[in-house]
Image 1: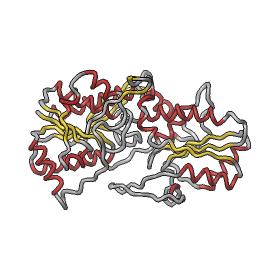
Image 2: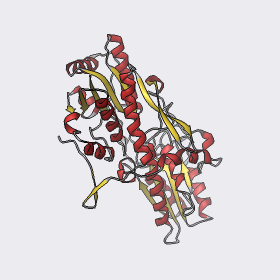
Image 3: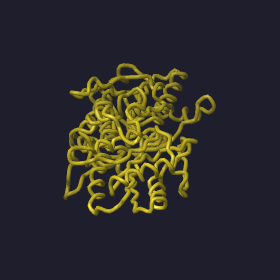
Length: 406
């Protein structure tokens, strides 16, 4: 058989480990050729295809791939039209699959990528195609349904918690009144922002407030809480999700002067929340402030990747191949937790329609009563995912990454 694999959506520190898992499992299962889509489904529609057998031709390159952050094959944010109204894209995709004699199609991505798998598998079923379509989960947002967690989240959570500890250390050196607001990714689910709670420990008091999209947000309430905290300590560090919303549904960042672009899926590109809130604190409380956006750093920091995360990312890639080889299509791979102590997790398979276009949010009972911190249940959930390290290979003092030549 021949297979093809692509990567889509926002990169992570471990998405290439899933690519390595797909590639090795496919080769071990007897695949003659393993093709890669350059820039996801958008690249496939332009027939931008690479033969991975020629690129990943030794074990060292595969191991290097597992430790290289971001999307080796490139990515896209491309929404397929409904084939009920327009079959042009689908006819193009399936003609290419036939041309390259593809039997299995793997797509590594988040919610929107699962939508692509759902649509392609449904169209394939409609026309009687034998191509099998399997989704491989990925997203630092950790907002996919059914699966306990998503590859990419553990490493991003490790980076967030580590960085928050370092920011807290920096914020306490002067002993003067200061409010530091750190903006963390998370559109409608606050899993990544919640990870800042992991910073608390014997050597660190942790962040002073956590603001999540799951809880309606008011600027007045925020300022009031900051003012109360300032009565007890000089330096305050706050973790705020980029996606915090006002009671009327607007994002807080929409109150700023930033232009909010929209992607092909209709998602507003969020930025400026921390800067807006820092300015409000400075004006209303007459205090010094600092706004920090972790931005892409939190999703591409391979030097802080979790070994647990890399291992599981590799495993879901392999599990996707096994599902396809066994004849399954229109499915996605999940991670199913067996226990917390000791931490144990296995892979599963689920109908992709149970994941596509749904969002998993943090259980409200995992957020404390004042909506400023996380309960122990969240810490027990998240802490196993950040364990251990698998450092990059270093050359001349810097991480060395494998890249795909143009």
